[in-house]
Length: 573
Image (cartoon, rainbow, N blue to C red; front, side, top):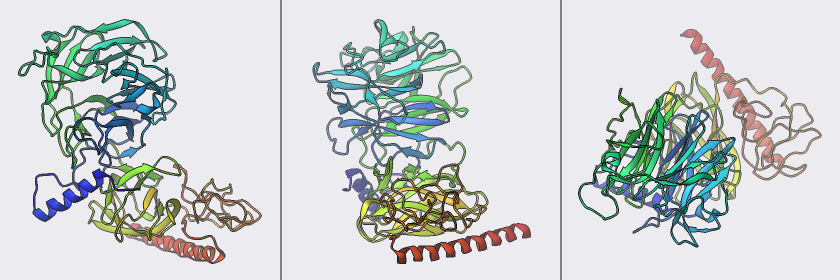
């Protein structure tokens, strides 16, 4: 576990600007673009599946200096366009046995219950870029090489594939730099029919290039095509040149052209000499994704994904879109009363993400003063408590729950104690007071020096949740979730004690019956189902169990008093 270059750069740069009074960069507390701050995320490729946007990106390594250092792809998801969940890396170039490097811009698509990811990598035998295809049962991967060899070896500048399935079921794959090529994919999505078609590169189709002539590009088209359809019109959106790149587009009445140049969408701006775009429609609005170098340490080899909402002109043309710090507005609000992954972030300061021993990802590298912003959280009539799954190899620290800014109203403070390791997980709880209505939630981390603790997930309990009854609903705790077992009566609820597997006499107080589940509550379950509504971390010794029960009793009593006060206040109003 070590501090990444990205994290140090952000912290040092922010501190330096604060001390010097320099306002050259936007305040990180207010901006929502770029939409991911824990990694450099170039070449965004959005995909809508069900009610979620999945964003596939590259990963510019922190160590890259004078060329692209890209070894893997990343995937993020959002249901509201402002809070993005990090799902880690679904695919690496090394997952292709025939590839030797260069995990450049790709795009994924869903068909027949599978997800297909088309990506360019350098072939070991050909020693040049080719396009492979990987397949998965899940949009977040893991993806596996579908062929054991490249899909495309045309030497048409075989990078930046884009894929679309037309209304008649025919799928098309476009790609290329300095030219554009395409194939018609077969139904299996891992083979194609006929020969590769090279699109005529004419000024009428892609605009006449002006300025420096590099001898390779005769039109404005540079690279990074994105194929999109709306109201019977096909759009080919692409990075245009000369470098530094901007985004332009062409249209056609057919998915295979001929294409007509339509103009510039996003002019050259930002600190990256490349750009890469994608367009989707989601929940009634259109969105334009791109990348820039706006994060601290950003630039041509450290690029980050960003997004803007836009509206097509009445004639179907695309308006000029400029890069902003604010980004797209939210669609709906986040429900805090279901388990939320800690790596669901609108903006953060200082933290990083990493693979979690309990599955998925967790937030780590947390130091004093770091925070996570979650946007548009709807607390409704009020929250009464907060749970978080945490781990610490040190003495821990605190999670301050603040509203609307990192120094905003404090509605609760959860203490995190040491667990012996950054992947040894317990659940900590604390009371919450004053969280009602819709707010941006800030999880602010405080403590001593160095790394404090990791966070896997969090969840609030609403004021109007049912009181925990004298019995649990039964069911054995999930592996890795501690729990006190009882005889099917009053001891039935689970109390989290450690992340070790639960067996009779180990990690739990043994009894003759099965205890309630003590792990993360199901998304559609109330906090009281299958276990105690307040879970207390700590050792599973008799003394520890007794202390936990006292804490539980006090918490339940507090909740009942708070609920009574809330109802009295509502009646008075």
